[in-house]
Image (tube, rainbow, N blue to C red; front, side, top):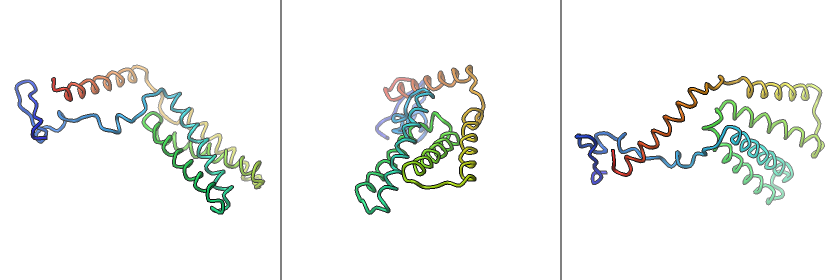
Length: 173
């Protein structure tokens, strides 16, 4: 850091004096997906499907008696978390996590009933319907409506911040 000093305007700054001037794009910012909300929901759906497949393999492994199924289940669930983590900057955490959990629960319930011949009481079915309705309601009206004017302003500010960061990295002010 000491060897890398820059001059902006007429002030001579060092990273120790003003670390914000020397801030670079972090690995996290580079690895974030730049996709639409619709695409983020598709990635969330894929994450849910992978998680349900992992849960089904976990059930089919009979408590890891079938080691390959157990290992495949762990890999699928970890991959599901990986996909889920990639959309959290686009879909708010409460909405994304509620959707991921409830849709996964609904899918696993149906999987258990139809493929593993497990049973659910009438109260269980009513609970499943309430979960589905609550998740739908949360996704439709659970967050404030996006203001197109603010969204455009935020996009412009993000682009300007990226340009500022790139200029700082290249040594120009």
